Length: 260
Length: 312
Image (cartoon, rainbow over all chains, first blue to last red; front, side):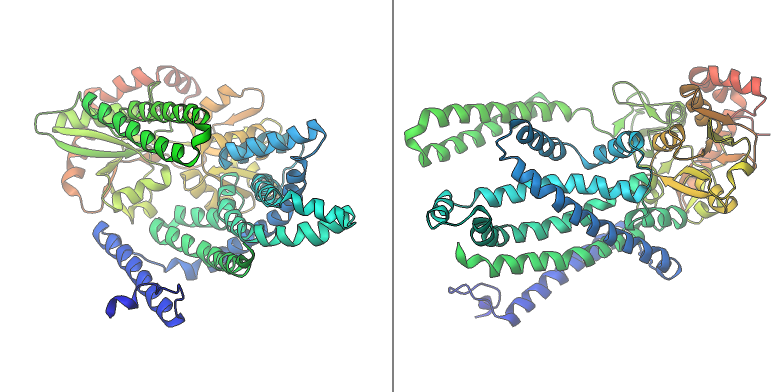
């Protein structure tokens, strides 16, 4: 039957060829809709500028990757202690961590960018735009990481900790052999997804003139007025970075899924 | 309008009721607590729906009823409402300003129903190219580069670039900015950006998305100067007299502002040119100056600057 080419069989297993065919079909449909929309709106795309500006685009791309990587490391250093701090017995620590997460998650990134760069940054002498950008992005992402880590911690059954104590594990041993393996398994997919978010969110640093990918493209389209070509390319370049991450995230999800 | 609102509200209530049943089935023993929670959620949902329907009235696209001539064609005007007093919003959020009045007068004269679309600067020319707007009037300077993408009317105003310098930067002329280690803030894609890119090779150019960020950079000393038109510089210096200096010595030819239309739209362009020519003689520009810029006109006269509407 033709229908079986497009449906998931009863046992839930989809062959590689069938998956590829269907994915290709969906991609073609998306491309067709985009192409038709461009035609209907009377917009012709032109990517001639890429050759002319390839050095700047590459520099911007590297800057985005660099900022994202640095922010990932720094936000881990913020997120994990904050997640632990939210369960602290010392109330000021607990509430400080809680307030940090609430404020960061409750305000738009653009407000934080302006606030940290022009007020905190100026007051404390952080004048380097790239450094300020990394700090802002890390503070932003740190709150989300903290929530992911906290969710992972809360998902570990209390009984396991008691059992570990009962068999004479020290706190360090409990952390190493009981908590950590499960934490990694449960939070890795979400953490990988967060990396993709960091990459996308770094585009907002363009408002303080960090010359990353988005700012590079804004500067280019401001001189050549090739708005559509420039921004479609921009989207494609972000996808080059984020699609593999999403793929990896899905693979982690599949591989670590068995224990639930 | 009223009918539509009540319809929306009842839809919200139905959805909340369905949610209530679902929740109640799952945890029957704690029904009273759940019920209270559900009532709270329903109330919040209802409040949200009421808020949203209240907001729906004040959208961005505002049709000008005053210029709503019988059977008039709609004229979609794109402008960035972030540049007082030419293009801005009144306290209620409606488009207001010298250019807004000017284009509405044009619409009234030629039987158009003027509809103003607030559009970010970067999106103005694309909105013409994609046919989402019929014209752009947004204090846009006529340049050769822009002419490759759109057609321009005759100039309707003339402006000069000026420098807003940090008070401690020691900048007194454009040459002082063209030095290694000097930072020049510009709005991305503005004529200040174009000028700095072409003529200030020694300075570091900091391109920012909006004027207020550029001014902040100068006020805080992160940038040494900000290149923009005289009026903006005058106003921002007046707002920050201690931290900034204004440098008004002209360093280039005056810039002509034009109304942009889609390439090849000669019919609209001819009407605009006729209206601009007429406005130069019939006192339209004097009337607009009196309404929006009386004080600045006085200051400009004292400095001996050319006014926006001195075309010679």
